[in-house]
Image 1 (spheres, rainbow, N blue to C red):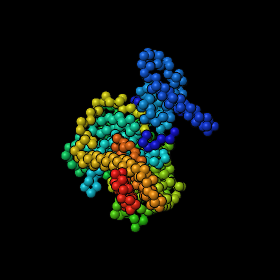
Image 2: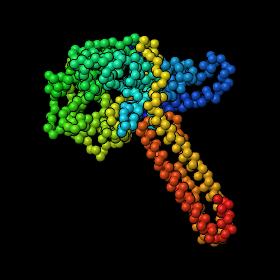
Image 3: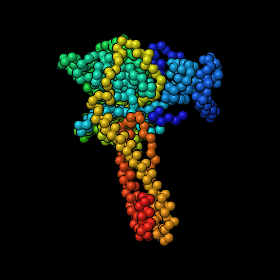
Image 4: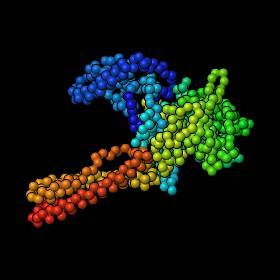
Length: 590
């Protein structure tokens, strides 16, 4: 059931879902289960083909007759669900329109929840918009699947000015510079535009927002750290906040919750925010602690705050810079990542990298050291930098690499780093999120009072991206002209080659005829197969590869054309030496 990177009404509705058990996957029945899945999928394909073939005749039949004659609808519902659970979201969205019975199965909240549990996980690498040498670059994202293959196409729901602040159950939380934030389904493209909790907030930033899901209430929550600089006022604690604003999808308004004391916005921005098991965690300054930091949490159900001390087993070296802490999510657990940094670049990690896991039990909270890594990577991505037992990191500022987590204590061998992507020249501030493709629907939340209609002119339609779009259009024009020139050159050289073959028997000199025959074989221009151009927008990594392929193909076209021209000139000279009459015939052929 492999799926590439280009491939729940949902798990988050306000009512609880009584989940059916997942299909049996015991070791003893794996072989038989695989055979059953193959047979059932073949049956599904045949039924779809049969439905298309008989569509014209079925128009004359009643709806009741058509439903009664559908073979698959005679199967038990659990068996149909088992087939559908093995299909990707893109295929299920097509199946929804086949018949009402399929629509009801696929849109059933219980099925959506089951499909979400079975969905494969992707690493989503997000690069926010920025300026490089004065040239604007849009926000972009790349998906990396379970086979560590990267996607080719841009994520349509992410606009050029969007900033990603969270991913949960296939939904993305996107911050914009306008008065709205956006919640979007990665796979279906459905979007929900929400009014921000406060207007004209100076210093507001996408990292002050967080997006999570509570497993008990099945509610999706957006949180916002409200800074003290509002409507032009600049109090003395401008880099701190006293209020967390929370919005539950479907509610009519945001709710304010006052923190126990003023907390640091700078710590939130530097260390990150993660959501695990219905709680939001971040780091805050704590001068009473040994490392001057503590973990702050906010329970989305109880709406209460708590503070946890950090582990204290650190050994700093004077020749490195200050120690830095990040909060991350690894396999659904809160982790603290810490290392000393460079004196000259606070983002560059030096020395040893320690990763501590917080074990939450009913009796106590306990920190345990999970990894101690020597020769660590330069940069720590967030909020997720461990995917399927491999660290996902950056070497330099652009190359994205992965490295296997070998044991609890190990040293990274840079020669064994696996390079995945090159985000140059705008790989700065790269984020890494876990995500899935799901059937979670946002329509059920669209009646809320703070839901807004998107602006008529937005995204790529803005004038600021006009030059970027024109540049992409020029490249597509170059591809079209190159394909056209290759086609013409191939046709002309093949025609000349055929006519010369017809002329060869008239050359009596065997040696000269063999030489002309060899040169004639060099006349035919052999170009690589022309692949159809997709109408979908490529992501930035693929745009670079596509441009490199284009320039390489242009150079190849020039080389082949020059070689064919030289071969034609050689044939012309050789025929001219044989006889003037054949020379005239050659010119007629050419």
